[in-house]
Image (cartoon, rainbow, N blue to C red; front, side):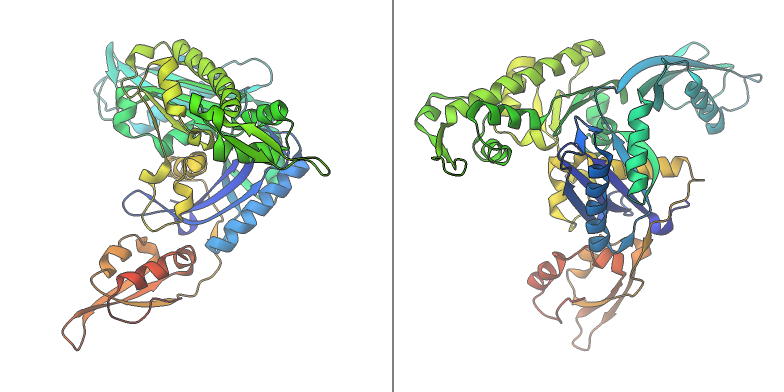
Length: 470
């Protein structure tokens, strides 16, 4: 694979924040997060789309600089998320006719068939972002997931094709390049979030992923292991904040604080006797706002989102096949009682999904929050695409080539070292004079630099031996 140091960077340009995550693939297939940077979008992004290039460039640069500082990786190439109400999906069937039925079907033939889908005629101003195979059919035999190695004359495939506006994609390219970076690929955000949050059994059983972000609510519906429907609703958590701001005449920052700390999707009678005091504007008295009133405003907007999500589930045509129910993720999924409200109106099982299951232990704990599902998913999809298209080259390099030395004692060395990628470690185990097993480890700067919280943890675990240090 033509990736220096096996490093991928995901860049999520969201409505409320821009987030850059530097990831390295561990041997167990999970992601080691080497560094993360984030910055407020400051109005550069609206409803998932870049609205002000200059502001977006500033936010991208700030987030990337912080990620570079944490990871000690020189970032040049990124995988970027794309969202917005212009994202649509359609189904199309491709056909491949083969001359010899007894010759095994190859990966190259399937790639050729997939590439032909890129030539579909679309409305002016639209382009294809993803061509995702669902299932194959060989000489009339249905439901084949992997035809490589099989034989046949006529190979057909149902594809899920995701499109977007060319102008929206070009604006993202413009902003990222002005920030001094190159884009390896654009990835539709719900596809990225699904990669970070959903398990294979869930996708096989049938599940609807609902990612409630700042400016949009992204939906990705799976059945039998394949994507069946994709949609993006142009309403997210920032709309709830604006509703609170308008309803109570408070500042945006105050409305966001009230939503996060006191908000609920279920108004109760007990809330009528509780109030939150919000400082007034300069020269004006503070405001007392009932928690019941706050909850009513939040519930009204969340119901609006739920109705639109339910509509997309119905449109998918597989509502009765979603044994895995609904998985909520994104920053908006943290609102109190939101799972109960979704369950009440849609009637499917609902739970919160986080990207933690795809992350190696001991990394930056903050990225395990559902609000980083898209960012982690971009890194995961980046590795997936890089393995598929091995001719792509990246220029993300470790800045600090020095190898800080850490000396620790067993029994915890093996457990800790297991999380370090093979390319970033040199371990020697030997017997100490006292007859006890000891360990010596060399960890490269890229990995060690991201483990600021790990040193204290190891020292706490150790009962003897020298301190673990940079």
